[in-house]
Image 1: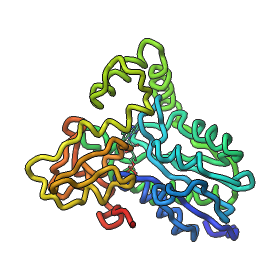
Image 2: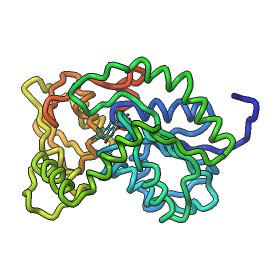
Image 3: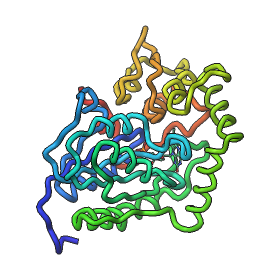
Image 4: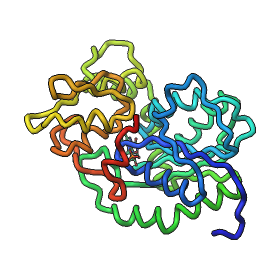
Length: 291
Ligand SMILES: Cc1cc2nc3c(=O)[nH]c(=O)nc-3n(C[C@H](O)[C@H](O)[C@H](O)COP(=O)(O)O)c2cc1C
């Protein structure tokens, strides 16, 4: 692995709700001596420029076939400036497949004058499903023992590798993404999201516009102690505490951090999700907003 050590100035930007993408970003930054930077922490800047010659962007896949990329990550890319000479790579973590996520990201980066030089997908436990994932250990080991070195090798070589989902998953995911774009199916999914977001079904909201309102389905039950963990773990500052209870401000990324990191499991949303999931190598203090 260390045969060809190139001197590079690396910054790894990440967004993560339950730690999967954080572990990936942190491990890459550590292995390659890079700086680890949380995407929301730089979002107050009008424009993001950097002296780094290599930029990594690590994030979870959301809503395959619709937005694919968390909205805050999209906004981050749209703030990147002077990137035409940079080697930019991305790693998306996902539960089932990555589909066209990396292609979509490349388009956004091209709109800023750069390009996505290489892209990788890392399968991790699906944090948004009701059913607990059974293969967790296998996925964690695959990351540590194989994929981490694989990505670092490609980035060090500054080559143009792009992961694909493989034949079977690739086909399934391509069908799902196509279905989500069909004129008669897309409104159906959008309608069900609008219902969760308590928006009028006949309103003109697009997927991007509905997502911030999905927090309207979030509630804190009587076990809430008013500890503010939810508010402090929300990287986009979408939760304010009012009379010791969380209130969501409808600028939600749907990262599930408030639900998953609540010490009392008092927050509910999206029906009954497995509230306790987070990556085992990440603890609450790693996730707390540093401001
Ligand atoms: C709102 C939401 C939507 C998701 N949509 C997808 C999806 O369409 N396809 C998929 O494979 N995984 C999906 N996932 C699963 C996450 O991409 C995956 O578990 C990821 O590793 C979570 O990363 P994190 O722990 O860094 O937040 C979704 C997760 C959330 C919270």
